[in-house]
Image 1: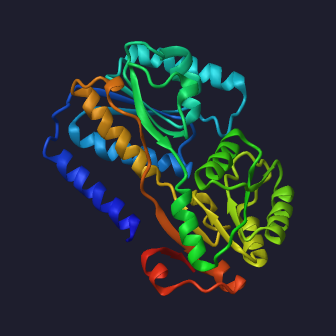
Image 2: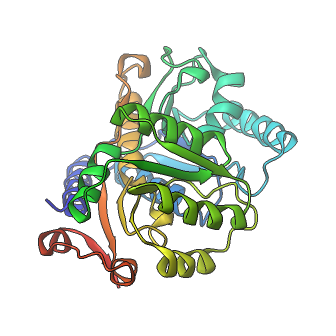
Image 3: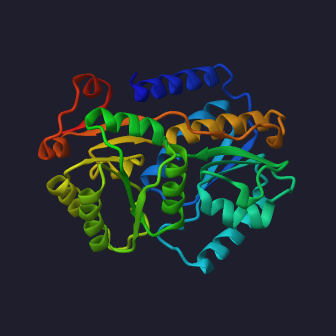
Length: 319
């Protein structure tokens, strides 16, 4: 089944349904705090979906950016969080949507935890317990890796037993690696790197020792070179490599990507429920269920790995 088509169909249904109640929430206000910046692919997908769902209802929506990917100091987070605290107190939104961990860490947890302002989060990796969730004034959708689905697709290309994991030396990448191993019930050789040169060396080393290699986050590698990474992967892939983040499509032979749109749609429809009177704390936490299958045909051809026709039919193919 083409999961991308399934998601697009859901989007059409949601927008059409909400269109029937256009202007129903006129006068209400939604503040969306994005942890990153405009142009960041993952959060752009969430932000676009949030606006597409909220705008037909007549509610006003305002998006602000924490910009913590480009500005990673603790001082920046503290200053930006204080500014957004003032914005919430003066603009008085009916609900605040926060996307990704930084907004939860910098805004919700220290400033609005267990307060009266309703919050909905999305894009928080694996668990929100560190932010005091569950709580009366918040609910959200967790971001998890569809690792079981990805591994099933990887084994269709070339069966294997041992798995390596390669990611940046960051907390999020390590959480992904640990949880993937837990879900699969296996011991993985995991390598976390700080530089692009170390990433390339680990890419080669893991393929010499493992049947399959999972490519985790590259975020946090300061000298990362996207074009060079894609070329390197095309020239040096020997085993099946898999990923679950859109921005690794150019380096992985096969991907089953998490979709920012799914996170944004859920957050926005939940925010609508909150604006209509439902308490956030009464809404159970959710986690993403959908994904987009992507095949990198350039890597498959260079590696001499045949891709079944039915897989090509249901996937997005990079040629």
